Length: 211
Image (cartoon, rainbow, N blue to C red; front, side, top):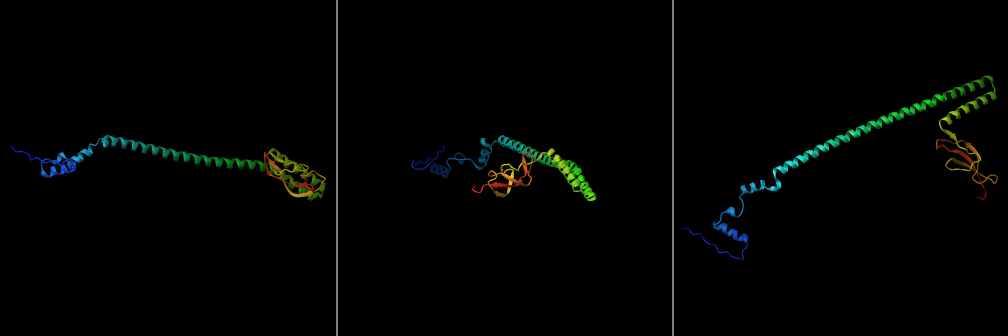
């Protein structure tokens, strides 16, 4: 009967040092102390944290996320294309409406132009100032009627208190005859279109000498 050699154990040595001595003596096979390279590969492949089914699940989730991202990208592109088409159609429609509005206004102004030409021609033929004056007054009335229908109204100025939102003071008159800030003369009429001032009145404003 063969007796295995007993190896004295030094309590002051570390476990790693004692294991090395056992290997060196050949008393204990290497498999006791650790896996061979082949066994390590097997353990790595069978690691419960990297199971094949987990990898497959992650792959499927990734593919699903990529599919959703592609669909969202396509939706964004389609929405952007629809918006660009809408903006183009809106711009074209606005241009058409503006063109029709201008055309309608011009058609209504053409008779006034005709009246101006006839009045001038008649005045040249008969040399009658009163006839020319009466014709011009009639034409002016026609023009004002058209502008009124379009929402254009003259701004009241003469005798009114100066308002910087409606009037533009181009001259001052030092006088005690009028209250300070009163418009004493209008050089050019102003107009509003709806609630918007499209041209302020050009006026002369009274100012007290001691103001």
